[in-house]
Image (tube, rainbow, N blue to C red; front, side, top):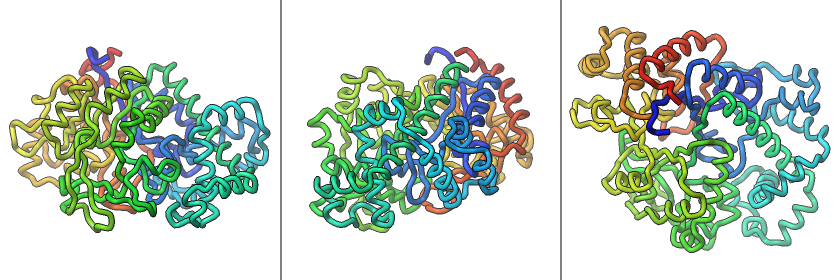
Length: 496
């Protein structure tokens, strides 16, 4: 694969057009795959697909194995005979250009409950529940008990539930059997619809790049079900939490708050929890981007209760032993390493040892240092070039914040003649990325559509207003993809 050149587009499914306030896995997802194929793209990349909690971040999911049920297509439920056309028509008109998560959660829940009432057990559902029982049973219990406690995090639950006492869980299983079945039903629908999308992508020659967050959320079924995998005290409180030190994105670092792993315990059983997690992601995608890859070499540990990430320290990660254990069970895996931030020789060595391409971000290239590793003439073939990522501003938004001197330096490099023309800049910027030596180039859809900073997907170190951006039918999708198709051919990225 890496002997060829290819390209693709980053677009999280929530950003797809749809009449239900959020992108979903229905007809528009299939149409998107058709558009990718028509534009001669080979890859579709997206964020983690798990169910999101507070803040709506796909990197803070309620379960590392479950799917985000907000992506379930109501239209497909109509096709299954679980909803009527009148029930679909009763859905209120929600914003097209951004996700109002509160409204979407409320309105989709109404449709899902109707669909559930109309659903009868079928062999496919029974088989799904049996196959996924290792995580699904605990996840369903977690969601039901969480609802019984007013959606409060598990560490604030009554002790019997918090500590997963068998008698308490048995009582819930008996008393709330229908609610447990409901959450399993939603996961069944998500998996069924995603399998359809993935099969269609394969038919169209589109490979999928999924994403595995390094950490899992504190308030998740993962930490509740398997607390011995994490650095908790006897009360279920983390002894330290995750983050990164001050960097490009924040002067006080980023305090993520995720619990840290008990790596010694994980090593003893061959990292089985991680192995199951990676296997699950491979059900959803062909390639896996490992978020925060550097933490496998060393990670930033912050004492629990700190208000910023400044007062942390570096701790050794599991290193090569982790990947050797995973390879022993699963074989060679198609990883892409998110190796951004404070990268050491040790991180680079680990990435090279496992044969994973790293990421090169074009927005990071123009600090006037000729040895900058993100400058295209310094980029190696075994890498993936991006104009920017979901954590960056759109490229036009980024460009608009630069000084005239820096704009001149950028435009001089990419061959754009006018520092005041955003249109000329973005076209030259994308072409520069496509022309890079990297075997793969991924462009965020906002850049392809030449959109400014108000269309940004996420601003790190902030909580509100993220993950909401959506593409609308009013945008020049067809026209811009047609241009991308021409550039893809010019730069030899249609050979897969």
